Image (cartoon, rainbow, N blue to C red; front, side, top):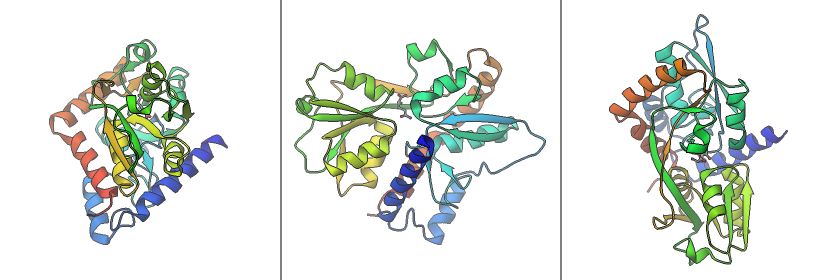
Length: 282
Ligand code: GLN
C-alpha cells in the first residue's frame, strides 16, 4: 500500500511537470522521436538471458522516475540510472528487472539478496561502504536548497527558525540533521515529491536535497520554485551503484560499462537531455 502510494505520488508529480512542459512531457511527435533517439529502451528482452534485479527509488527526477507510457524507457521507469541500467543489461547480456522502493530500504534489499544491485543516485559514503560495495563514481552532486521563488532565503543560515524538509535517510537528511542551525522543524519525507508539494503549499519553508534533482525539480516548476547551493555549508558528493559485498564479479562487470560510459560523456549527456526534455519550453 505504501509502495502504491509512493508510485501514485510520483505519477501525479510527473504529470504536473508534464502539464507545464509545453511540448515536453505531453510531447509533440518530433520531441518524442528525439527522446527515443537518446534514451535507449531496456524493453529489450532476451529469453535466454538471466535476470538482474535492480533496486531503485523512482521518485528522484531525473535519475529515476515514472513517466507516461511511451515516454518511459520501459513504458514505466525513466531516468539517467534507468538508461544506464538498460545499457548495462545489453552489454552484460542480462534482462534488467526494476524493483522500486523507498530510498531508505535499498541497502537492506541488497544485503538480503532481494536485489542484485542498486542504482538510485546513491552517494558513496564510508558508512554505507561498510555495508555494500560501490562502483566507480559516475556523477558529482551536492546538496542544494529549494525554496519558493519569492522567499527571502539565500543561505542555510537564513533558514534559522524555519521549517526544513528532507528525504529520510539521504545525505540531505544527514546534513540538515547535523547542522548547527536552530530550525523550527525538520520534516522527513519518504520521497522528494510530497516534500516539494508541501513546499509549494507553504507548509515547509525549504527542501534540501541533491543538486542533481533540486535543480531539475526547480527547473520544472520555475514559475514557483528556485534552488540555490550553499558551498560554505555543503560538500561535494559522488554517486555510485551499490553491490552486495560478496558479488565482486558483477561489480567489476558494471564498472567496465560505467567507465566506458563516463569516457564517452554519456552520463552527462543523459542528464542534460532528461532535464531539457521535461523542462518548460522558453
Ligand atoms: N544522493 C542522496 C543519498 O545518497 C540522495 C539519493 C536519493 O534520494 N535517491 O543519500
